[in-house]
Image (tube, rainbow, N blue to C red; front, side, top):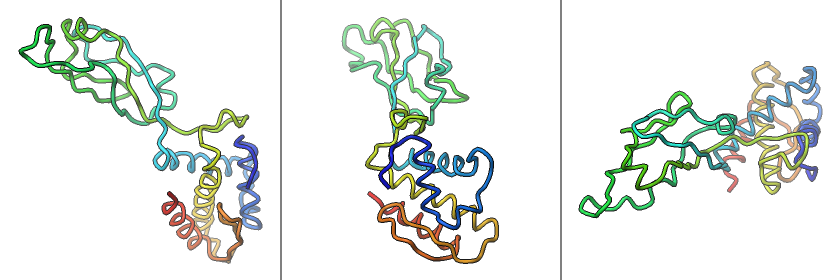
Length: 205
């Protein structure tokens, strides 16, 4: 599988990899295939974590900050922050106090306790933070956030979803599918193939 990382090319390769089994999935506008690819992208977010940098402006004694729209668009979970540097020691001049603990709840950054005026004076009001975010594909290869070297791994994970759904549809006859790495065809029941392909995906470095 050596196509580009565009959504169209990824979907086409996924369909070809399932051979005869592909005919089962005939929803309009490739809805089935897009669902499998979306599930694979979600799984890749844990295997190949993607991080982005976000920022909010702090206000003294305010403990809740809604995530900015660009962050919220693909936010998965909070990672860490770059604010505060070295807070120093209580006996040092200008010590502002321990830094607040930061978490995310209901799509907002929560500071416990709220940053004080002394914190802002010592560390500034620009709070920058790293967060884990979703992988995406788009109409062009440049919009895909998966590294091209992991293309086969993404296709393999999408095959898992397809085989899982095929098994749920009670299709108990053997089907032919090619693995995402070597392209080698194999015959098995959809449930067995789903389990086998998932094991291969998990074992991949």
